[in-house]
Image (cartoon, rainbow, N blue to C red):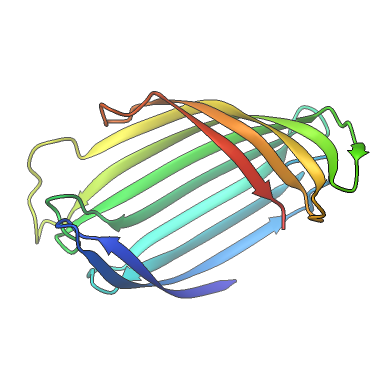
Length: 217
């Protein structure tokens, strides 16, 4: 499947100005995925991949991206494993470096999730306002490498690290509602907590806690 996208974006420049840009993306995508059963979080089996380039019109080179993902069965019939890997690039900017200066940020990411649906209560005591289908526990981990790529024709690297790795490990817990205030789709409410290692920001916390709100459309 071919994909072509043209989208306007707004970026903040190094001096604080709002810069209006136009980004074009072209790529190929292919996948083969089995349907997801109502009792499962992931499809039983599946694989997909995409590759392409994106072009910011005020930034010279076209920047590549690629991703691949897959689903495998877990230890129990309702369990599932989700795996993904991706590579993307984007112009690098900060307080002193403006876009087009010859520095690109490359991001390589690996992710693994293990979904464990449990407690299929199928409770409809407040139907039709709320129907509780089941709960889900999802351990997860990720590895992300950030690297600065220098254009030797424009800039010479000087000082500071040009690559660092960030590791995360944690889990999510949510409740799946088959109906909520007459919305005819599965809705997930929950919380996610992960431990973060490797963030170079000295003020960053070593953990992240986020609320989950997801609607399966």
